[in-house]
Image (cartoon, rainbow over all chains, first blue to last red):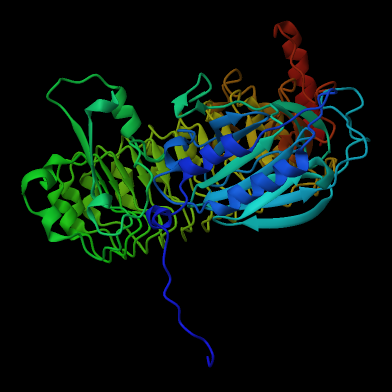
Length: 228
Length: 389
């Protein structure tokens, strides 16, 4: 370590007051910095910028108790994963999802939108699938034994606490699975542009149906979907 | 409602506050706190939780166990000791009034037998410890409603649970349990039974007695089949069977009107439509039995046949084809039929048919609606057939 001189570091007063980056600060910064601008056709103009801001803020926040926990409500019956709306801004929204033990989501798309997922607690196993060439809707006459095709798995990722992952339709489709038999998983989802419908695919057949996303709480308050 | 909560947060009492965020009142979904707040109460009643989570404790500090002021143990109805390094928790016996106790994520090799002092306890969470069994004294905790022992080292089903008739949720996931006792059928209040991630090779038929069960998780085990009594679980909404050794399911599953989710991935399910197969033609005794069984009462056979044959006739199984009145004894045809389920799944169901030719359009054995003088001729014909082989 020759030549290394220790320096006395002087901290500015504001730095001394700063503790770890909190969840409430993350939400405040998202409101301030993340704004979706649409052009005259309704398409988002500044998507690249929003992607950078979203990723930077989510990676900065380190999951700790006492912040997101007040939004994390789970299904009392442990049958579904619950979506808890935390905040909505211009062209985006932020959710906390609570996954009961052993629960896997359907294989789904993202409706032409961008989606970041940050793990707050527990783990999720992601399986990524190729998008089928044509959409065959369940219940329609063309959905039969001849058109049924098994979906092609193209990758698997395991996300642990604080990992930030990104998904959009050009990367294919995915399912998320809490494969722990003893722990819940809790994840933070940032979607932009905001969307409430998505396509759900059956792994054995590739048949598709449309799913509607509902919120079970908003700002920590239960909605009519809670407990049903 | 929330204003009545006196939430004693020990967290901020220690040097080096871990978080700038305000501690919330609502904790996690295992918590029964939410339900208690919804109940109206007198102005004198209050509800308070002692939160000792994540404080690097290897014992419960003496000052919280002794009777003194704000921290008198009897004041608390909830105690959270999760995410510490507890090896032993005998001091919890001081907290006699708790209805909620969380000991998750510690290093407990056993729950103290003194836990039976917590007579009012309704929710006990002890996830992710090193428990191998429960102390027998826990059979006294008859108020228990929600018990979570997931992620431990249980090598047998914890029998003190069978003494808890109010149990609504029982979570035993991620242990090493090789079998479930028949006594499980006595836990008739169960709504959630989580057995995923154990070593189960079969499930007792008494599971069918759990009439309120809405969530049954049997995933990540070694099951090859399910008892047909699963069809009696009319409140079942989700049945998790993924990662087992299941080839077919009992037919009755299609009768479960509330079942909206069925997970089957990771099982060696019958992949193709399997036609009936028959290894041996039925014996003469079987054929005679089939012909006679329905006439058992009418012909006063009991008076003329030896007792062994009467028992044999009574052991007849009804052909599952609803349009067929036929019966079978040992020789039946295993027929696998794919059924569309919930409009989403194609599920292989195992049916036992009386004959390879039996189908809903052409049942092998039909009765006429009125059995009158035709019957005399009918039975003569059948008797002749049987006797001639």
